[in-house]
Image (cartoon, rainbow, N blue to C red; front, side, top):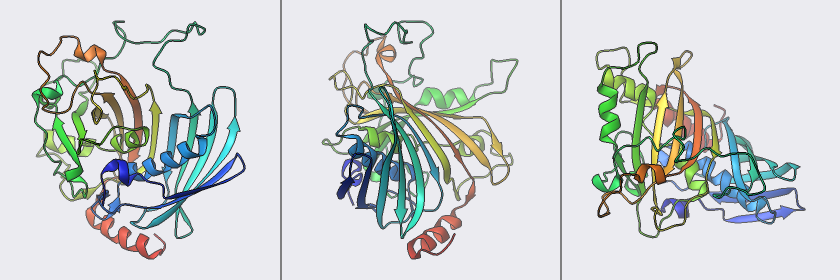
Length: 337
């Protein structure tokens, strides 16, 4: 059992030429939802393996990740097989398979390039960022220094003590207010600051894959707003089927930003049959400070200074939590699901 930075660990790697590599390790049992490893955590392991695969090349930054979760993973040893599909001047396409007990549990496609925080003088194409009035600001409205971190206790999370969370009360209140739009329905949203526990922890590119899969989803938000409605939550599991992430901005290293805290904003619009399919769009943002940390005078433009690190989209299901336990048992023994 380990903090996130140590739980995302590849124990050994072997390379066959420039195009193929294999990586092995063991899933940390602490990073489970009930009995099954968190999907974002498993994806973080794959991203880490792909970064190792690309480490000897000039294109070392993940730009985009697409993952399909094929079978339930287990707390056990794993192999990740990576191979290069195409190498270009600006982008490299890499494919990876996450395997346990000779079964492919997760298949991933990663586009590598070079993330830059600076505009290129040789590239005339504009970027959209503050102070432009059209640039998106961080959707969280409450400065993290004004909040108090708590453990996330809504679901059976093995890693609850490893992360601190502070929900944005302004977003929670906004969900309760009637819509001001007369031509569309109200959109439910969720926002919080997440802090990795431990002073030595820090946000990394692989850890963003985990954080992009850590939020309160649409079925739960809907049940909160309509307690007498058709949705009842409390004993459900929301397994992810697909998850894509676009990395937007390098993780800031300046002391103006927190090393182990990010802002997470999630929103969803649809729930459909079969099995309560629902989508969630998540934004992961930089943070000016850790949760509850003394910041002094909060500048009025603190939201303009934050940078969107990644945007993700996923499709998940609504199933009974009992299915989580049954699938965990089958995954551990290698039987068909």
